[in-house]
Amino acid sequence: MPSPFRRLRRPPTLDLDDIQATLLRARPEPYFGTHAILEITDPAAGKELLRRLAPRVTSAARWDEPRPSWLALALSYQGLVALGVPQQSLASFPANFRAGMADRAARLRDTGPNAPDRWEFPFGSPRVHVAVSVYAATEDDWQREMAEYEQELGEVPGVHLLSYQDFAADGFNVFGYRDGFSQPVVEGSGAEPLPGDGRPIKAGEFVLGQASETGVPLPVPVPDVLGRNGTYVVFRKYHSHVAAFNTFLHDNASTEAERELLAAKLVGRWRSGAPLALAPERDAPAIGEDPNRINDFDYAADPRGLRTPLGSHIRRMNPRDTKLTVLTDVNIRRIIRRGTSYGRPLPPDRLKDDGRARGLDFIALGARAIDNVEFLQSEWVGSGNFVGLGKEKDPLISSQGKGAYFTVPGTPPRRVKGIQSFNTLRGGEYFFMPSLSAVRWLST
Ligand code: HEM
Image (tube, rainbow, N blue to C red; front, side, top):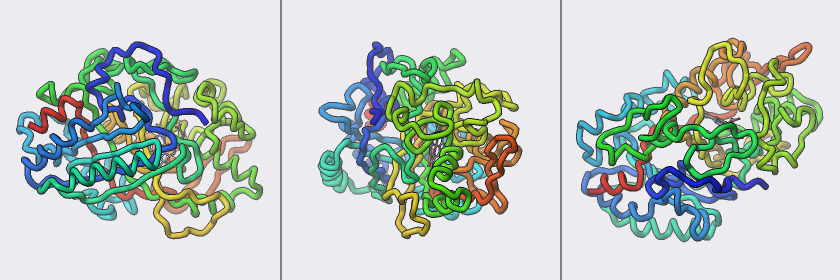
């Protein structure tokens, strides 16, 4: 199984002691953990919370001692307000972050079953203030750390736990696909690019205050101690309809081999992780297990999508060298993904829903993460215009209407009908992930 950890061979130039681990280091695999949402009802209590958590927030320099496990912390705009952050500073954050995810539903195309009025509490309410995530490589480490945090945080009056989500997985998501390994390499992070990763992307695309792809840093919230080395986080909780997905495959393919090929066409990769670009006709699990080969491809030899459909999930989300009908610099549209799966996977032969909660907490990080997810959702997920597919949407993550279809290019092309909404959004929020020095600054 490929480790999501990249070898750290290059001398780091970023201030790793000050940057949170989640931004620069892949989560463990397998992983266990909890995402918690907290509310601050009194600024002094909020500062006390941060004072207690500050020594535990894990940096990118020491995330794996003694074993990979860490605590990550992020604040929504309402959380910064609840902490009593000065107005001048609040005003220096970008408008979409200040508005919050629910307010941006139209741009994100979060309508119908995905609309904020259908979300789970506390998402969409102004009470979502702090997100705390604990990641661990073993169940024992996770439970031990959680017991410590519960004891310590339970004692802070004026801070309330509104919701939490436990998660665990072995690297495969609830649909059975290997997930989370195609990531941009951040210049200066010390990570060694692997074949197919492309050149490292300028750190400022991910870490506030560093030079970006355009040469200048993106706007950094003030004061500098608050903004520098921080980043933005987009959190979206999806409930997955795996039985409906399995049924769709059964309705449109008659043998297991055909079903697996259709499953691969929808994503652009076999469930093993092997990309169709390298394994167009049958699965090659050895490629999925080889970090040197799993991302070592582009789409130059496949302009029509005969191997990897133009509308497949990974080709939409990172078109690599695909000729786009609407010009875009793909290097500034990259996001770091740290999503986690919750609930038990449902095997491909189960066509009836068992009523259990399962899905994915999608987590994107980067200095442009909010703009980029808004862009991806509206242009590359919710439409097909950018690759000449008209109104066709992402087959995996869109909310689909009646008559939705997915095109598998070929001679003749095949229009697979019956695509449904295989994932429903249950809530989400935009957060700011401060540096370690900013957490200390916020706590005083
Ligand atoms: C339940 C929701 C989702 C599921 C099940 C899902 C599944 C997957 C899978 C199986 C892969 C291939 C593994 C990999 O390349 O690491 C992938 C890649 C990717 N997904 Fe998703 N995804 C979901 C939501 C999203 C959302 C909401 C976005 C962005 C708006 C997104 C963006 C991406 C990107 C950027 C890649 C990497 C593509 C590449 O670099 O080739 N995904 N996803």
